[in-house]
Figure 1: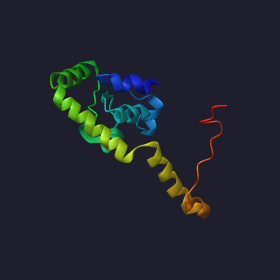
Figure 2: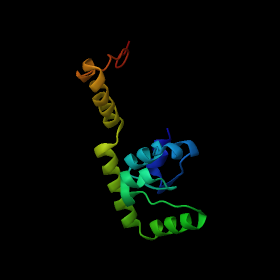
Figure 3: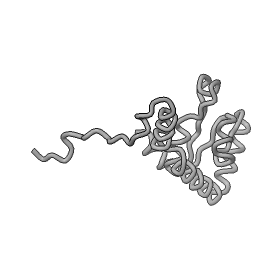
Figure 4: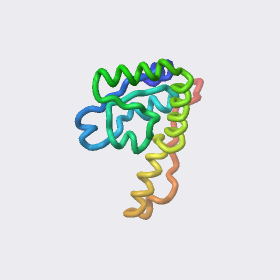
Length: 130
């Protein structure tokens, strides 16, 4: 799983695929890296700034990428604070549980039965010793 490497990294470079950028979807990598408490820099996307403000520095070309990375490396305390703040923002409002709840809320508008709690399926075979 890439997340283990993301958590151990000093920083992660993200770029959005053209199709993702066209539709305005923030790369899932931003959320995963952010949840790990790791600094991330990314290519530009307006929706990224809308969600995270300056917690994810953006770059538009090689020279700007170099300046952004140099600035982050020059001030490790500020970079660590930014990474912690990004982690908190992701965990407070952008986990899979948040998105699932949001989907259920929207679904409940059209399907009344969707508003009742859903019990997770029973898992079989876990914890068995025989």
